[in-house]
Length: 223
Image (cartoon, rainbow, N blue to C red; front, side):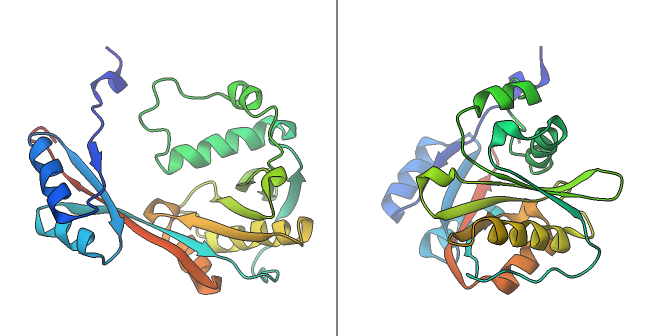
């Protein structure tokens, strides 16, 4: 039997009020439970008081409207107007970026470069890419579809979240986004899995926090 077949997703609920949360807790007794709430909110405190542990914190950070200075060693930068037009190693780097953050951990069939290219054939979502000497893709960022508006999410950073130059890489990627799309505004959603250097850098330049949410889990009897 494949290893992924044993995965049982947690029962997910949002404790919007204590009565509903207690009902969800009772209904899910014996299962692994997961809840989402605003950081520091009564719902967050309620989960912590009932043996949930915080497993992640996601913050949506609004970025400044001017380019971000890039310090440190330079990279070779690339811009691909459409996702499907990016070369194979860029698409593979994007998949590796996703895997390194656990975003495809429980996907039954892992997506391939060919599958990603076919799936995004109609997207007008640009790729920003940072290559180190020798051509290795060290950083990659995928933007929202530019046909959907001018307030765009930048989903990206160093391929390896533990990269010691993660802050430099994300700064270079953002600077390229500003250069290519000067009329747009940008934001990023970052979680614990994005790495301390990247989170610290983006938080230091952010102008506002749009959302600040936590994910908490309570293990089931077999966890």
